[in-house]
Every structure is written in structure tokens, then in C-alpha cells.
Image (cartoon, rainbow, N blue to C red; front, side):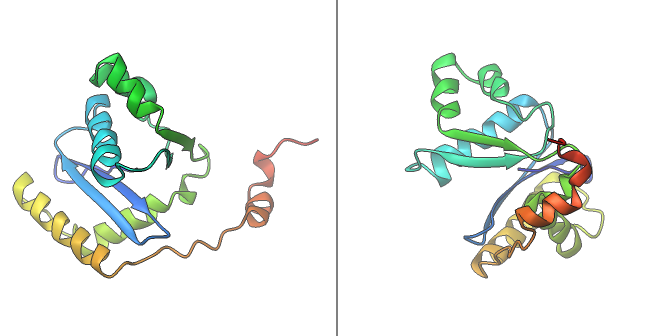
Amino acid sequence: MNYDSVASSCIFLQVEPLAGKRHVAVTEHRTRKDWAEQIKQMLDERYPDARKVRLIMDNLNTHSVASLYEAFSPKEARRLAERLEIHYTPKHGSWLNMAEIELSILKGQCLDRRIADMATMQTEVAAWEADRNSSAKKIDWQFTTTDARIKLKRLYPKL
């Protein structure tokens, strides 16, 4: 999941790279509650039958299980948290994040101009999402573990 401020708004972007699916939500804020609402919607509406959803995201302070507990009752927060397998992108390697790739494409194809109001932005982004999903554009990630060990050698501990 990723976000970016555009025209006084926040964009939450979720990508399922091997299926060629993405979901984009435009909100007014990027609070813990906003993030928690996106997670609940993802789990309950898009993946209701999944026992676990592997979520790879950046290290933003709102992106944590604690946000679920701030937004929902303890029982509901626990129900959602138990369905998540969370992995954070490396602090010095956010360029590894596939959502960043999709966000860049969204900016170039849809948000390359000032959009005056929230309703217009939501409509434009929804149209982009529908078009991108209908073409099932997948991400062919070719950066391997071996490549990472070479490129990020300075970040790995010396044994």
C-alpha cells in the first residue's frame, strides 16, 4: 500500500502484481484510521475468503496493526490483524516497493495535471484503475535475491 499527496488529498494504492490488479482510494487524509479503513475494506470486500493476506508496505508510522486497534473495537481489530502477514520494505530500499512503480504510472497517466476537486480526482483515479485492471497489467519483477545481496551488500550484516 502506498500514498501520495496530490491536490490536498491522499492516495492509497494496493497492488496485486502477479494478478495484474490494483486498487486506488483517494481520501482527504492519511491518518491511522484512514489506513485501517483501507485494510478492512481490502480484507472484507476484495479478499473475503483469504485466510491470510501478505501485505508488503513502507514504514510509515500509520501502517501498523496498532492503527487497527485505534480505529476498531479490540475484537474487530484482532480479527483483521490475524488475517495479515505484514512485511515492511527496507528503510533504505523503498525503490523496491512495487506500489511505487504503480504510483509513478498513475501520476504519469492520470495525475499529470492539477485536479480542482476531490470528486473529480476520485472519478479520474477510478477510471484509471478500471482501465489498468481490465488490461491486467502485471509487474514482471526481475530483481532477484541474488541481485539484492549484491546491490544492497552494505546493508547486510557481515558474518
